[in-house]
Image (cartoon, rainbow, N blue to C red):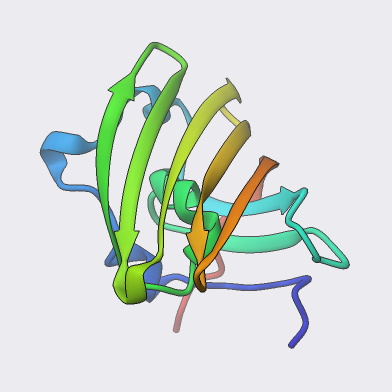
Length: 131
């Protein structure tokens, strides 16, 4: 499977936080195609179409259905904890560097193994229209 380009729209849209939990710090950044660098083992940057920027907090588990909870929020960052099926979970701090650039510090358990890494994400365009 090529890790360079991944477009996930419908599944990611279903993973949004409830309206009461929508982080206002992330309102500065908008939905679209985000290019993520720093993913362990990736040969190239990962491009992902996201309907809700908060879904980038669960980058390690982007293919899974997870329940997210907003733990803390400041003017420019949020901490989101999430739990997925199969015992996987994570906690991520997402910092808005600019409206088109994010820093994501994430850690947790994936496939019964620990992970911890930092990603850089930048918005590179709009998601392709589905027709």
